Length: 182
Image (cartoon, rainbow, N blue to C red; front, side, top):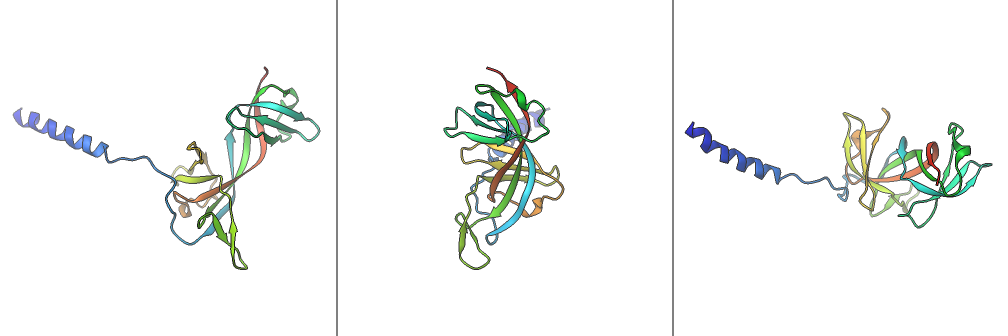
């Protein structure tokens, strides 16, 4: 019995030391390799933050929304599959689900070499924070520190991606919307 009590404090000390070794992943590391395009047009779905409708154009199926944290308005084009589009009114709170395309790059100070020579600036929207190929998850970190994890398709070249890669995000269209009238 005495040996077990002497070992308990030692195990506790080792556990505390090992727990202190863990650190959260960071996206501001420099990825390996030359600047290049890793993959374009990775389709993902994302649920946007709730926002207030500023204007609705039923002809073009577009809605301008403004999030309290965002000074500028965001324009969403709603696809034909959105059955409750006609219920949206100015002042409503909406939470759209959008289809986006991710393009992943290795950039050199925000620039990518052009095929004819010279450098082309690329404005990234986020950085890769973590890649989990076993579950096909790609976690991004935005400049404001917010993180978002996407489930990507089988065609995504996750083995070529790593923390610190730059990502450009292009919203294609809203495919669903939750509407809360005000």
